[in-house]
Image (cartoon, rainbow, N blue to C red; front, side, top):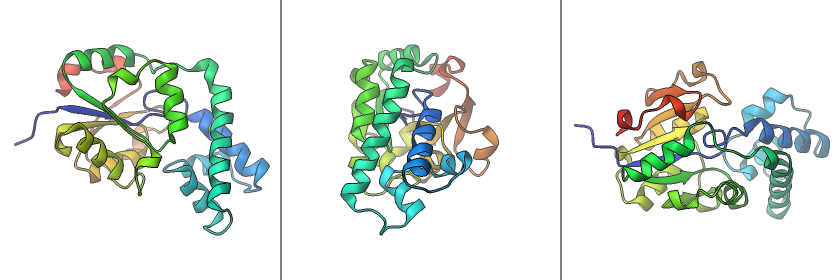
Length: 220
């Protein structure tokens, strides 16, 4: 017998705000112009999961940069992304209403993101959203990032619910895989990836372009 849904866990970038093209652009220029990686736009897009440091290691190997150098590159990338995206910062359509209705209905909510706190704060404080979320799990809070389930399992634990009582909102295949490995269902935002890119996963409830397509009562 399925457990009732008590909590929603949201990925951030591409799931709450439609900003992944700006992350892709910032990485594209740092990796190619600054670091000489010679990657295509699609190759950069394929690498955009997990922690920033993990991305750099995947592309350049573990001995190219020191931890301090990777941390500096990570912050520089986020500064470039924020500078370009800040004038456009807004929630995906319908999410403001969905968050308010969920809170009113007593649904617990958390953030589970591979972003560093610098980026999470940019969104939550820039859009005055912090009061909705009881748990915030960032890149700094986990050892293994998505597709490992640690991010979402930690979020469920912080909310005091079983994993099976959570629905995850995601935009990336690796994030849906993390949800599946955590024993959680997922709603997918098709902001950066098409539905056919998620064919390997059986835990998906629905695909949506924005939150106006969701009815809270259908989820809880």
